[in-house]
Length: 284
Image 1 (cartoon, rainbow, N blue to C red):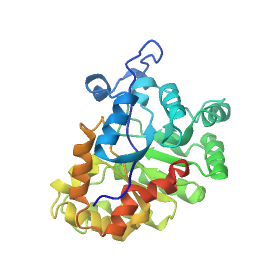
Image 2 (cartoon, rainbow, N blue to C red):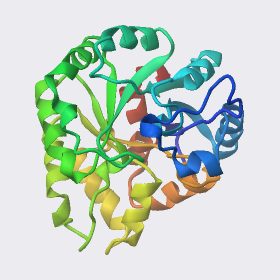
Image 3 (cartoon, rainbow, N blue to C red):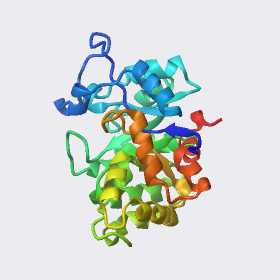
Image 4 (cartoon, rainbow, N blue to C red):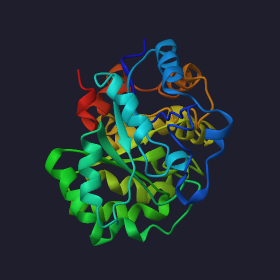
């Protein structure tokens, strides 16, 4: 039986482009947001059908840039079931003011990109000291930073984990690990080294499911290994829906299959308990 599910990585797109204009970051809109958008109302229906109790909705920067208004307005409608993970420019001169604005409008976490989006960068800005005041604010109030990066960015994640031990860092898609060769996953050495930092968490998404299922040994080898390395209390599920094609219930079923080798206790952490640590607004 699947325990309570909390999804920490769904996206929503409004059909009302007058109220919520399309203005993707760097001018490149994501293909999924154009071809299979899901509104807040549709997301609620999908969650109810899939048995998802709560969600931390991740703002789509590749649709709306730094304007988090749609997620903020939707979170305000049901703040007990939803929180928002927003994006804004941490290097901007008014970043602190922007932080305060979105904090007052449902922001439960911040998402940063160095790779894996429609616009790739080498990502060195991630450790630019100009961003540190925002990290310090997150440490003060217990706010999680979600970081989307590739294995090339893991050294910067380690630097930030050391510098800001009070900030929980969740890596999107488990940082897109290379599972070539199967156990013991030698290509993941840099990723697994992050387990030394108690404030680093892995976000398991359908992209992780796909990689694990295609790797030698399959999901039944990879996910128990990931639990041994990081602990189930440092792993959390995120659907990536609809960027990962649904319906949502299909993605949940894929997760059920992938987590089949885990204990009931471990599954409970991955499906929902860790999410409540990362996003206290979703705690019971």
